[in-house]
Amino acid sequence: MSASFTSNHPSIYLLGDHLDAALALGEDLLTEKVVLADAVQPLTMVRLVQQNRELAEFLTTVRTLELSLTARLLQARKRAEELRRRETRLKPLIALYVGGTAPLLDAAMELGDTTVHDFQTGDTAFAFLRSRALIARDAASLERLAELRVSEDYLIAGRIRLGTLLDLVATFLDSLDLLYDLYGEPAEPETMTTEATGADAAETSRAT
Image (cartoon, rainbow, N blue to C red):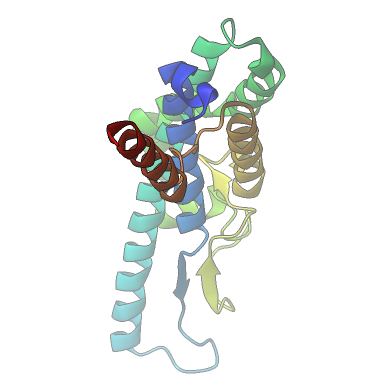
């Protein structure tokens, strides 16, 4: 096992875990989409009910992933700030990450207390879709849209592009791995076997 692996502060690994989880959640978010009714075809009651159900499921999943992602990003931010004084090599990266995620602090408070948002928008699906850049700000309906899809332009908490956040997280995580060997593995089994065989041979030689 490498020396860096055994000597790193536990907070380094906690930070890496939060960043890795945030990256995975962001990638999951990018896979979310919902197909809408064909604008050319007449919209029947059955298709309308189906679309509303699928849209509700899409919004629920997207919101859940967004909340989980925001929580991970803020936990990583907390760990990064704890390490700022101890790990001087990380200071530039920490400053970049803390600055890039600063808008999420206010957003987290709003996500936890939705009374203001409910009052201003009624917490409608359209308000959510507009605030996340899933539809245009002036869109009054979903007409002429074939689907709703989360892209890198999705605004996390209505503030920061998802693509920008994922680039920031990936850069931070890669740098941590480079500096601290986060995913370092113990000695290869073959090496361990060779060493054991050599030790057995030496023991046998002494016995004879």
